[in-house]
Length: 231
Ligand code: SF4
Image (cartoon, rainbow, N blue to C red):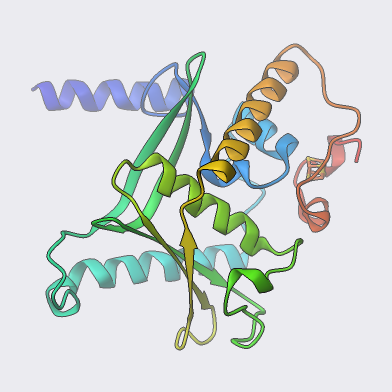
């Protein structure tokens, strides 16, 4: 009976606050790597369920779910000498202060190894860099790298990050980038997350920033907030 009560409480929180934990407010790790205003508006108005979806994103999500399911179902064939139990879609959180949480869901954790799988459309195998030194400043790979670094810093036993980049049309071969744990970069990431909290609070006071600064030049093009944003 306790389980059902807990389920009811979680459902109520989800309906009321947009997350299962209740009034604690959450910012997703994923959103911190993009435009702060977009992150603030998305968090404040909980716009997960409309607008942003498109064919490519949906296909990416399906491929993502399929790969995680395959790893889970075939682990006994895949594990080789690995003794650690794989944790799929592991939920993590980090206290930002004042009731705010930074939250995320990691694709796969195996012992001290943390994996993120990304599926890109319109990228040839050759176009995906072999290592991080080759990554252009405007590349979305920078966002993925810092998200993975955030997970490495949030999870106490995590040491090694693996960013595996697949393409929509041809899954094999894929590129495997290794990410080093960087606590200084994580501090900068937390600072941006706290900046988003401040923006949300300004929005709640009826203020929208006059000169918002997207993280990447290309973000405004497809942004659902374009019609209300001064950019
Ligand atoms: S239009 Fe550009 S600056 Fe405005 S919220 Fe969207 S991404 Fe950010």
